[in-house]
Image (cartoon, rainbow, N blue to C red; front, top):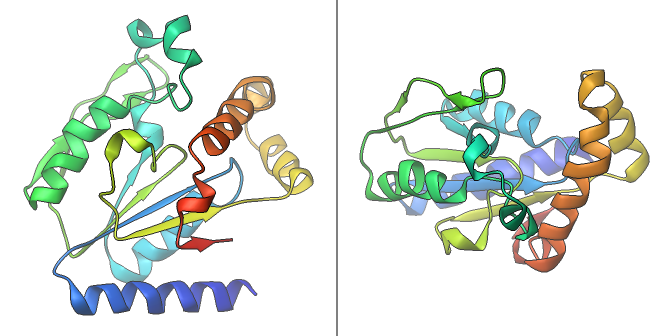
Length: 187
């Protein structure tokens, strides 16, 4: 099943690359569903850029009660749009500043030269604020028990935040913006 999924996905990306100069793919979905793993496999296969939505966590001054009431509001979608999507769609070299979870600041810029294929990986990569920039939209889900096991394999100090905060926020974003339903590939 996994092999068939990967083969079908590669065929779909190859079709897009045969028709277009540049292809932009988004991988959104549930915590623990395999988004980062899939992006890494595609990057190894295509030698392409991968940009992680985890690099766009909110800075401390953005973490307000009002912001957290927005579906999908717990990611800096404005900065992602300005620093990544706009120059990427224009085919220009750009840099973005990843959020550093240890210092709660923005790290030095990472330079990116657009290639034929770019993967945007992570929850909130399909936020409606971005419009429709993607050539292919992928949604990965996971059953609750497997998700729980995968989350418990992550650092213990984050478990409470995953189960009590982040997963409920993701689920609200998926529901309110019908993210799964907008994707061409769902697994």
